[in-house]
Amino acid sequence: ARLHWLLLPILPLAAAGYLKTDWRDDIRDWAALSPRLIAEMRQVADISGNDTGGRSILVQAGNADELLRRSAQVEAALQPLASKGKIGGVQSLNQWLLPAEEQQTLLAQLRRLAEQPAPSAEPMLQLGLKSDTIQTALQQAAAQPVVPLDQALSGQTAEAWRTLYLGNIQGQEAALVRVQGLNDAAAVQTALSALPCNQTGTCARLVDKRARLNELFRHTRNHAAWLKLASFALAWLVLWRIFGARRGSLILAVPLISAAATVGLLGWLGLPVSLFAMFGLLLVAAVGADYAVYALTARETPAAKLGGILLAALTTAISFLLLAISTTPAVAAFGITVSLGVGLNVLLSAWLLKKEGAGREAV
Image 1 (cartoon, rainbow, N blue to C red):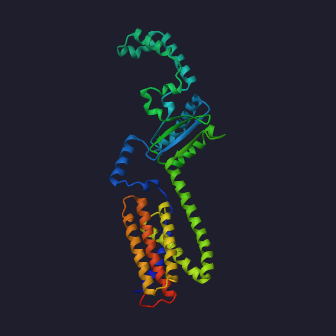
Image 2: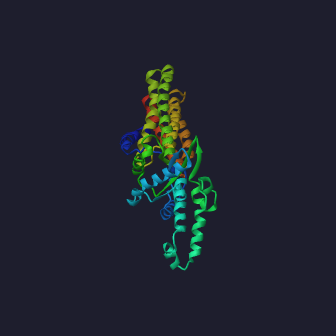
């Protein structure tokens, strides 16, 4: 069988697939979530107004009162976005507690109301409350002390806001402003950059945990790709010393073309070239180099060489095809990448056997 002839349609197809490649990492691909569960999670998020992407705004200040004021500034800056539907809403500490200065102003206002004659409380009197009861309640409220932030968050009623306060971090008070239903991260970034406290430093910034993890994966993937390219150059030098420039280049062509063609085929399959796919490409390149060296150096007939390569590829494919049917997208991408690459390695090794003078009956 002329296995290497299959390369004629596959390689141009893989080259065209580069137009469809998607170099992207998504932490959500690391979990096997059923479509039904995803739909239910989105429905719950829409009903509750909570963003499930782990995106919040980190606010920092020199003290707790300044932290509350800056949280209020962030809320005010994001309010126009809520009216435009770019966010669903916000939850911040200033909604639970006022700064000490504003608390004192409120207490003073309550004292003035307590000292005013009964007509000022006419609406409550119409509800059936007695004048003495109203006056007593106002006096008791006005006599309350100013409540610090840590005390305000210690009660059971503050459970919803307690997780927003991060405490003192490196001499700065820190808190989160939880953004609900975030639909336009760029608009939020623009609104935050216009804050007065962000003009001289950074008092409030958007924290996107998922995007941060995806960026780390992207950096690792790119780093691995560059290291692999460097290893190809080093491998060519070693192969050149052992086999000469021509044969060394032929050996290296097998894993290099196989890895490159696999990327193109992933594009046709609609699979992103993620960190897991990159790990698969690294394995594909290593396997391809083994096949190529065996094809050129083993003291066997061409048919025996090809049979050995096919047997090795079959055992490898059985293992990784099982991964390819995994319900976890990242694991499936790894299995598919290796399976495609191993198949291409076999075809390229058959081409190498043919090029180096194997009989027609074998290749």
